[in-house]
Length: 323
Ligand code: AMP
Ligand code: MG
Image (cartoon, rainbow, N blue to C red; front, side):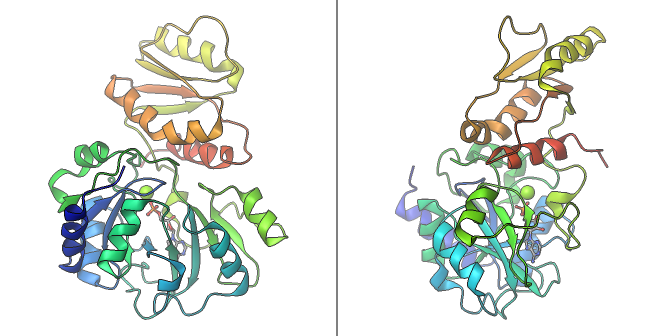
């Protein structure tokens, strides 16, 4: 789906004026502001209720637009950019002078990415700058994958919402720290670790607890209203029926391995067997179970390879202890 040219121009004008534009990307909807303007960037943190020390990703229209945003692009990062941009890969590099410290959460490094979505690319080209854009949701909650999700959650806090239809990847970008001598994955996402390693020709570190502040690593993140409980795939049905019997309104993520009758609970989501389809649907499923009045969601983790690594990461965070 493409947006009308008039809408793109209008949205680019809002960015130039220091306003907030929600826009579609292939991963999730972003809440964008001019990344070189500290006042504009601070409005993102306000609208999301996000702590100002949590760095934002700067989105540009192409790798040729990185001048000023980053200090330099080391060789391995250049290789990854060439292979995976536009696409769901964020590279953390040394900050250039255009990236305001407000956008980097005070860090001397900056996350940059070129989104693979025609509307996002048209907006960034028309704007001509870099848009700092975290997911367009309240801090800690489920990321939006449609324009309606954004409107429902942020409403008047956004100056303009560009509608580009549902997001095709459905989970956030993979973040690779390329500032040091060794590369590491700070957050699994839309590009599989295996695919990055195939291009690099060496394996990537995946630190369990990054020393750098990564809000995706906050114990509870990507969380629906309902509490999320994770069990083994063959325990999902029994656990769901047990909780429903205790008086919970249970929503269940029924694993693809399940056959036979669905459990008798408030709401059932049949998890797609394809990891790409599961990723695309994940946040919509969580929102749907909230909408249906569930207070407890029973799910299991997919196999942690390919996109399954990102899906499992999001489910673990959704099930993490709530603040
Ligand atoms: P979100 O905005 O919710 O998609 O999250 C953006 C992600 O990018 C967060 O996990 C940030 O911590 C991460 N990020 C952005 N810039 C940096 C940076 N300079 N260093 C480490 N992580 C970063
Ligand atoms: Mg987010």
